[in-house]
Length: 296
Image (cartoon, rainbow, N blue to C red; front, side, top):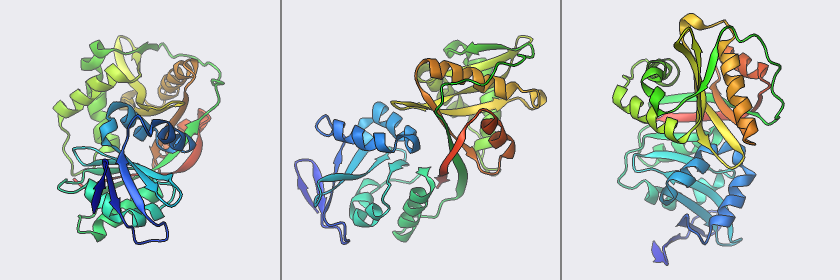
């Protein structure tokens, strides 16, 4: 390994030739944005990371073509996001990737399924453990700005939430995490969940559905890129399901996003047929398989 002006430089043993890695910077910001724009629909979370923590974003460049070959982010806590349309980059940048995770414990790999699987296999082949939990999703998008026709609101009031609503939303967030995110063997951490919720209320968009003075459903975003808002945390209390509430809540969120000229994208568990049917009813279409693999 040699170090040149902040670049890690290795000779990568593949047909891709030499590969370099550098941190995101003002000098490569335009080229980085152009690369990500081509794949924006699949890497909204990575673009949000670029906005929030640019020092955790790294760019692979093929020195034969001088072109960006892939982008990856590695957080201090071991969370990995990626934009790797060419899986050969993982082979070509073998030593570079290992340098990024040196002395770190992997927490998760989040992104398009083929690349997520390839990264998990790569790390396992280099002595890391296999993922303990693998959640497979379907990435879906809604580009049209035409909102489905209005229907009976069932006595619901929809509200754009602020930090002042955190304590009322927390029970729904805890239930959502238990039902949709965590494995049966995992225990939820209410303090972490509360912190995460408060952060989203400050930086993202969250709508609630209120019936008889009680919040019964919520829908929001968890990442914002240049042209897309990634939906997440969509949840309705069990006793209020099958009343069209989720449809109306997401519809309200979509109307707001489209007024801000944002298209919508989300990923839904591939086994959750009810949610899949809901999003198809809202005119979402399937994009590709998506995966989050947890190592802890």
